[in-house]
Length: 214
Image (cartoon, rainbow, N blue to C red):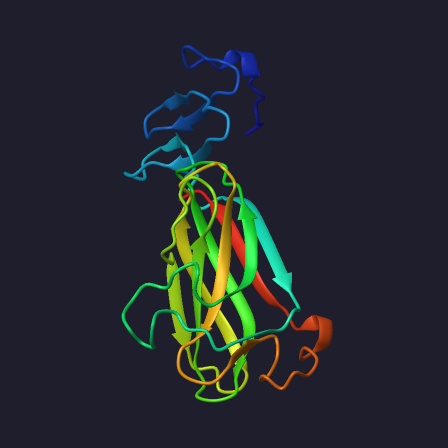
C-alpha cells in the first residue's frame, strides 16, 4: 500500500490556531490549544490525555552574599553572666568575627545562613557562636540563632540556619563568638599560642547568606 501525503491544510479540528497540538482521545483526533509562555506539556492525573502545566517556582536562588577573613580571633568572653545561665546571647556579648550586609529582594523570601571556620581552645574545649541582625528596621539585640560545640584544641565549626527576609532595606548580619566553658577560644588558629594563622591565607572563616524563594 502506498503511503499518502495529507496536506496540513486539509486537517481541521475546529477553532484551530497557531501553536495548537493534536492528540487522539481513543476515538478521534482532538485539539489541544497551545499553553502560555513557560508552561510544560505533561500527562493529566488520569493518564488519559496531555495537558499544559505551570512549573513550580519555589526554591529558586535569588542572591548570594559572602564574606571571609583570615584574621585570628581570641576571647575569654561568654554569652550571659555565666555558662550556662539559660539567657539568650546579646549583641554586646562575645566578640565580632564576621559582618555581612544583606539587601533582600522580597520580604516573602528566605535567607539560608551558613558559617564555617576553624575554632580552637586552650582549655576545656567548647566554643559558642551567635547570629545577629544589627542594622535595618528589624534589628534585635537578642541572637537570631546560637549554638556551641566541642572544638578540642582545633576543629571545624560549621552551622547553618534559615531566617525570613523581613525587609528589603539593607541589614547587617553578624557572627559573634564566645567561650562556652573556661579558658580561651580562638578562630583561625589551633589555640591561643599567638602563632601565625594556621594554613596562612588559606585558613579562613566564612559567612554565606543565600536568598531563595520558598
